[in-house]
Image (cartoon, helix red, strand yellow):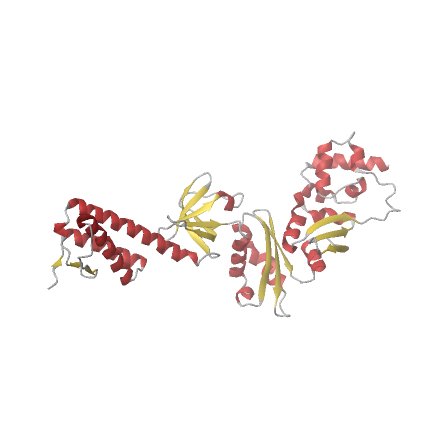
Length: 380
């Protein structure tokens, strides 16, 4: 007849496993298998082999049949506990990995637990650790202990140890998921997001398409007076969001991507994925954007390297003067700043609005006024 024992040590270990089973939803077969494995390991150490022993575990009652815990001794019981703890930890890690591996791309809200120089540690509602690396944070992000932070689950890494659940707030997927949550037409499948290009915290461009001719995809995503984007922009630390209608026509897509600039013509080199875009002089700075952000994002959105060119009337432009000719009156670094926003000649600058130059160039208002005075004097 089978011998049954229920010592104090056995009850404690069974209670530990019962709690773990309930918390992590471990199936009974796995629970019994791990317990048997741990006991067989101790038996092998004590007697050189476990072949002559049958171990039957009843985790619901805390029973061990044909194993007498009192025969083990304190050292063997300590070894058993350590082995059991190690296997519990492995199962916890496996459970955590399996819990999160299929949630990659999902937005999660978690509590900030601790912030370091290179990353921020967050805790989910079950007390699991989530990592938000500094490079995955938006410039301007600042979290204190106890804050709630939203991010997308970017990856779940497991290299034999504890899983690393990596979050991101800079991923285009983060913006996509928030837009999906704000726009019912996307949820219903009437509008799809084709591509997102982001420079986190600065600006983003989104290409969308409607499957219903009655629905304006851009208007639906933006909402009345930008209502559907307002909360997203706030979450992204003021990141400006441009929404354009997607098209498979590359030339037309480039034209739309360079909005708000008006494009005259586009010449494609499809083999090298390059495009030459020609605009009126007063549209060049708009196409390039502040610090080149607009043309950079357009290139990312379309997948083409975009070069911007001024289109001028040669006869009317014979008396124009290159900005490089003014280095005796204007400091070279100021000329460089003007070139960054697409100006090459004096008439380029004079043909643009003062407020636009102040907004897009990294120059003080007084500096812009002085430049305009110098350039205007050249033609007077």
